[in-house]
Length: 106
Picture 1 (cartoon, helix red, strand yellow):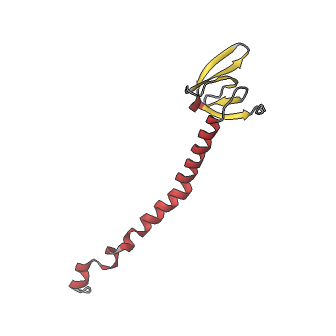
Picture 2: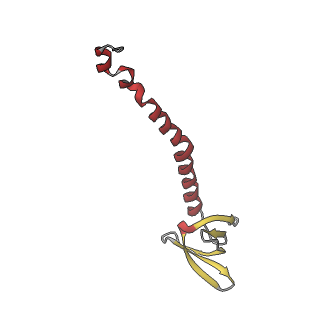
């Protein structure tokens, strides 16, 4: 017997708070490398969607490009003209990016 019975029963140093340190460090790394950047991108996307206005050229998540014809703040959809006299209603959340913004009228 190389280990004394008292030391074997106490569990050694791993029983203390040091056993949770690697898990906590991994969680902190995940927060700064994965979660925080995703939250920033989601916030920028929400701001972009709230700033949509008539005349903006947009690209949808499906890859369709067009120009916004009608924006109603109360609705979740915008009317986008994808070709001459072809208008479709697109859910705001499905707009991936605004390729060119119109100038604000003074």
